[in-house]
Amino acid sequence: MKTFTLRVIPETENVVYRDIIVNSSNNFYELHHAILDSFEFTKDQMASFYERDEDWNRGQEISLFGMENGEVLEMAETPIDQVFDSVNQKMIYVYDFLAMWTFSIEVMEVGDAMFDDGTGDYEALFDDEDDDNLFDDDRFESLDDYDEYN
Image (tube, rainbow, N blue to C red):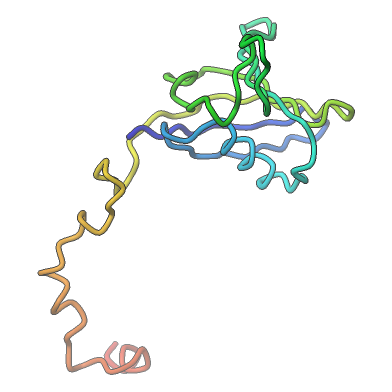
């Protein structure tokens, strides 16, 4: 499974940004919530993502709610990897259409998920046989014993 490190930068006077790591299986609704959590915004306003070109022209919209005409994608129905696939891709995120909080999103890194075997079964990645004797050492009964040993 791929991971995407996304740099999210609000258009403000101060230089502030957050790097958010998402999996390819995440959708834009989950990214929307991750952005709001990372900047400590409330979740009671409308928002949309927009694909963009180099001149900042807005393209395809991914909205919080879909439209009947099908021209606008819905966040909950659009997986991250449907839009992102390579480094340096950029999007615009707009939160609260009255206050017009506008963010630039850029893919900084594409990688593989750590500790993921593709099934979501993280326990299967660790060999339990070697763990049996890991802490079976008579010299240490507590952390205080470690200080005395050194």
